[in-house]
Length: 507
Image 1 (tube, rainbow, N blue to C red):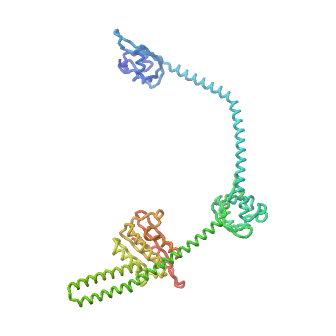
Image 2 (cartoon, helix red, strand yellow):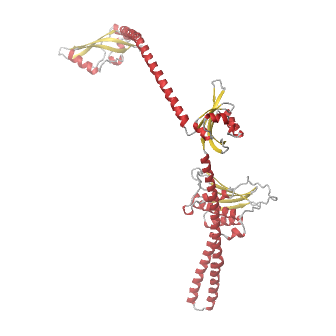
Image 3 (tube, one colour):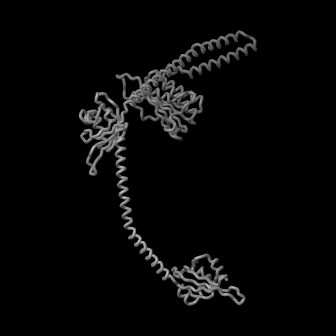
């Protein structure tokens, strides 16, 4: 059996919409999109055993409408008891099923209404119990909250206050009272009952203006006056409290005594200033020692070597032996190498040109050294304005540029660099720029050489001590420019207004 239709009566044509010729030899459940309540293979197994099956099927008409049918299947066999056909009789029970569903829904709704009505009294009773419990919890929470607030108000390490629009103190905790040097709130109110009694008027106006504008102030630092006329530094947080219609009710806030913190900060600033001064003195002492050693190398060792070379040359002319001549020539060559090394070491320690010809000439010489000894085209440019600087600033600027060029050769992967020195009003500016890989200044403050201690950080601090500054401009793939600025030595009557701020420093 292949489940193909061989008989299709007029009732089937009317119910489903297909003629018998249209469905002949087609699979019945494929035509009708039959949905079985159990697998078809199980239904056929029951037919084979029992010979019949009954159940509800969901089928589709030709119009696409779904119907529910009560189906009865009967197995037909031939004379040899072999199954040859299945007789299917379907009765449309769609309306009955819909009625049953509607009745079930009505029953459920009625039961729900009865249950709801029955539960109303219990629900009302439960709500009453819940409400009573809720009010009890709220009362407990309010009581505990009031107790916590009272403990916080009394025991807080911060001063807590409330003042009206005129500045009169409405409330103050014990910490605030002690902070201002009073023994009780009543004494505070009677002696210094207004904010103006302990805060300068310009600060009082400043914080009030901010409260009016922003409604809240955070971290406002000011100086207050205690009852004994001594001063304390405080950090204040405050806000304006208003009614729903916007009317100002009062101001409230907290105050922290930061007097000791301020004293510690002043000590730290003093120590930092002393350290910068010490670093500057050490740097000058180092440079003086460098210059002394360089002078000694040039004036003593260099001269001795030069005289030795001259005398060996004269001695060579008196000796006729070729072997002795060659040995003297070799010794003379060694002395010449020592002279060159001594001269190079002299310039590395303290180039005489810095003191003999000045900063601009020394920086130009430095650019030449980079061009000659490194694979970097290092250019130099200076304006024509005079740039009188102190010995200390000259040394610091030269050391900084030398350090920067060393960083360029080691880290920047650049092939072009430029030193630009200019006068801008009463300051000297030195730009050191390169076309290297650059870096992100926020993540990498300065290149550092582990063998040179703090490197540029030390130079920046020394410049700051001399009223100068260092600025770094860089970005990944955009090269680096470091700008050094320091004050000039200017006579007041000759000081002019010279500006080169818009000059091209690299390109």
